[in-house]
Amino acid sequence: GSKDGSPPMLWVDKDVKARGDAQPPREQVTLSFVRTGRKVEFYCDGKLIGHTWSEKLDQPYYLWVGGKGIMNGSKVVER
Image 1 (cartoon, helix red, strand yellow):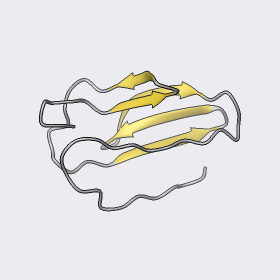
Image 2 (cartoon, helix red, strand yellow):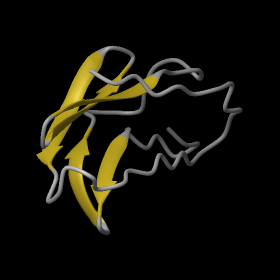
Image 3 (cartoon, one colour):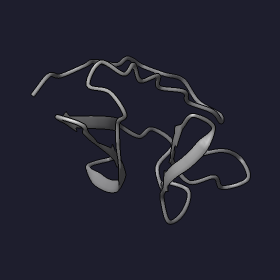
Image 4 (tube, one colour):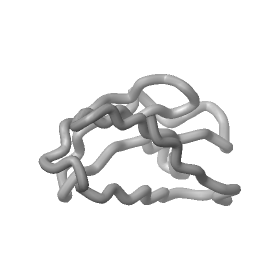
């Protein structure tokens, strides 16, 4: 989120594919992606924000975080 109250969003190729209801209530949040085949789900603090379908199985994904705060770390989990 940002100072203006931005919700978490999932962007793919400059299009918003999923958007949360509101700015997360906490300053520190956990964002995660779960990929099952071509389906990619996006979560914020364990809550499903939305999903999208990839064009290719080897399509790369990038995590971009905007707003105020500090990124403490990240990890990728294959399922």
